[in-house]
Image (cartoon, rainbow, N blue to C red; front, side, top):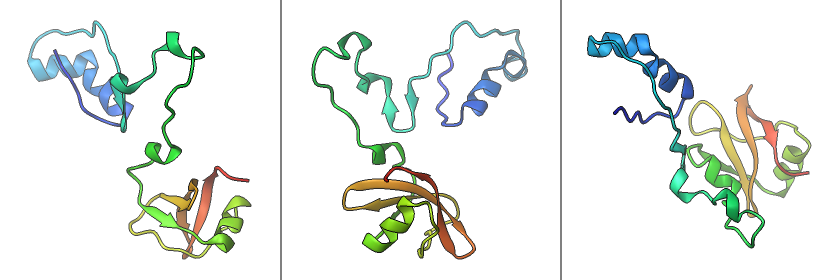
Length: 126
């Protein structure tokens, strides 16, 4: 049994492609079943059973948990206003790529560096 541990689904799909398995094992192969057991920090074991949804309170995860792999950039009230309107704001990313923009209330946006500013790409506040 093969248990790949990978975030990007294309890697998993290509690795499980029968031609690749055939080459890797020098034998014929086929995929009988494929089940995703985790997506980032979210594991199947932590999911709420479908039958229990609507039957009472459920534990919701904070949106920031979904982007815990991104560096965080904290903003003040003025920058938050710019972010809420989708406008670029002063700030720097600690490394290339997207950042999680947060304030005291949690995740407010995902932004990317653009010409020396951070430009919101996904805004979660209004």
